[in-house]
Length: 391
Image (tube, rainbow, N blue to C red; front, side, top):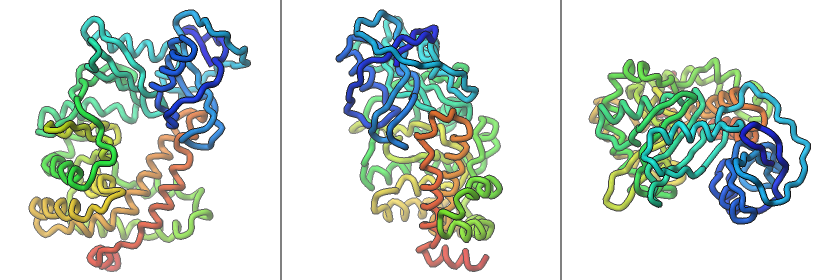
C-alpha cells in the first residue's frame, strides 16, 4: 500500500512474489516493485501478515513513493493511525530524513539502497561509483549504545570492528563499509578464530566494567525479578519451568563460584555477525545486543549448531590462564539455561517497546526460549552438576 511523503494514501500495487521469505528484508521488495511496475518505493513497515511469524506468507507493507506512479493502483480503505511506540524510520518521510542526514557525511554522488526495515533496525547501503562505501543503521533507544561502544573498542583494543563515520539523533549511525561476506554457516575452525579474537577484549574489560557503564552499555546479567514476570504467563504451559525458576538463585551462585568475571559480551555472537574475506581480518559486527555479562554466554551462541567441543576447550584454557583456579567449562554448562532465560526476558522487553503490529516478528520467541531453558537445565559436565548440588 503506497503513501506519499505527506502520508496521503494513494492505493495498492498488485500483489507480487519475492524470492526472500524474511519479512524484514527490503531489497528484493524494492527491486521487484521497480521491475514489475516501474515504481521506486521505500518500505516503511509491516501492516498485516497471513502467517503468525516469518518466514513466508501473504504480507502487506506500507511503502512510500516520491515520484508519480504510472501503474494503476487498487483503491484501499486505510487510515494511518498514530502509535506511540512506532519507530521513527517507519513513518512517511522517516527513511528519507535519515538518508538525507547520512548524505551530509558522504561524498557527493553517493546512492542509497534500502536493505532492511523492521522493529530492530533500518539498514541502508550507500554506493559510490558502483561500489559500497557506507551503511546507515538506525536502531531503537535500547540499542543506541552501539556507536559509542564501537568507538571505545577501536580506541582501546585491536579487535576489528566497524568504523563509525557519524552519529546522529533518533538512533542513527553511519558506518564504513567492510569488504567481505557475513560468515553464516562457518565451521568450527573459523569460530575458534573468532573466540580467540574476542578473548583479549573480554579479558581487558573484565577489570573495566565501569568504563562500559560510562559508555552506556546495559547490564545483561539475568534479573530474577524480571524473569519471574516474563515466565509467569507460561508456567502452566511449559513443564518444568516452575522448577527451573525455583533453582535460579542456587544456579547463579554456582556460576559465580566458578570464578569467571563479568565483562563485555557481544550478545549475539554467531558467524553471521562476523564479516571476513580471504586473507583479511575478521570483523565482528552488530553490537546492539552488547552489554555487561558472563563471557560464557557468547560461547554458547558462537558454537550453536556445530560440534564445538574443541572451540570450547581452547576458550576454557585461555580463561584458566587468565583466571587461575577458575572452572570455565562448568560455568558454561551451568549458564546454558540462564542464557536462554535471559533471551526470553530480552524478547519480552522488545515486545513491550514495539507497536502491536510488529509483534508477529517476535511473539513466539518468548515461549521458545523458556522451553529451551528447561531443556538445558541438566548440566552434562559433572563439575557443573556438583557445583549446583552443593548449593
